[in-house]
Length: 567
Image (cartoon, rainbow, N blue to C red; front, side):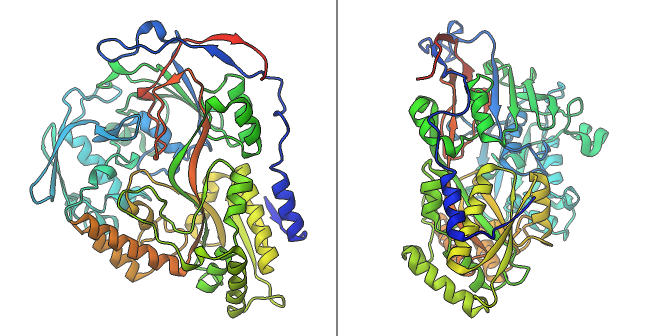
């Protein structure tokens, strides 16, 4: 769908902001639920005492947009990753608080020179069909990721592995990858250079194993109910598009005895108001998000169920710099400077998001994200400079810039896009039309860089490393949707990837980020927070900066309703 912003900009901005005004209560006669919950006690072996557990252990999770797919090597997006973390387990995994813990590898060793990592696999690890997991499964999986024929847009994450970069680029055969089978339960990985952050990479859903016989039998249809064989605590039982994805416990999972939730059901929840209603009706155990327009009501009625925490991610608008005039840094800088980020965070998002001027969010140990000089200016100063830049680029009242903003279906993306379009019209005289696309169509349009001009996006850190954010703009990265190609930037990232000293590595990455900020192929808007409602009877859920919540660590308390009626 396409919207053209033609009404007066001040009126448009006022309409967008007034949409944040709230009723005293959402349109629903569903009362606020309250329960008597038992005291949480544990047995000597650390498990919840059976007397406190709900008789039915089924978790209902809101999960944002419909996942793009479930193949961990080719899909992208947080909703897909959420499901994949329950279906698959990597060599290393993450605990409920997101700390790194052993996964299929029960232990590992790093050579004295740092070039070789040796993983010792659990001999009781099984696939969901009962097959024994061996080192050969991992060799097949890693080779599949870097194989250009797979088309993985995240394969670049494995660049620290010996020869991975050349294989991804098609310059070497997959057999040259620095991964070796020592025996059935021992795997070695050789690196291009010592890299202590390899363990972070190996917790990414990309680094999940896949079952070779299933792929050979079913081809690209293997990741479906009846065909998928996985190795995580859960296995795929049902997939109903735009309805739900149902997972059930994997009886062959090596730690199944310590898994309590029997089923987990993921629901696509793009309509945030409808998601809130489902949560209030008891249909969801937690929400993926909460509607910003109901901020006051939620604070007043469900404050004890509202979980807000910092999330390692950046919300931004990208510019397709392969198209004119967005290949002119004066234009992209002007557009970025004219966005009043404080209006967006204070009036639209409202749950603690912070204005952003760098691409890497704060929170990574040892790294201070840089910011452009104009980040310290007033908004009036930014807008004045932005108008001068646009005039230098040939745009003004007699030749106004016209552009398209694309966003995927989501009420918040629409409101933010409308607000930014109004800001550009008000301060710069820029006219913007808005185009809404379904998520998978949206991703494909961005990837092609054929018609895209400006697009909304977000990038979430799956581990604590600035490289995870900055390599998005590496020339050979297939996810470089802004089309930023800079040899010096690439050189800095390559040097950082091979730096054995962490301080040197972070310094090189900061230098690279300063370089990309100079040309502004994107407009950072704000750093994320995760804001959701979680039922008080859900335990084992822990807030963390990565916003990763494996179901295997959760359990549901017995619930006895105490009263009905809204507060």
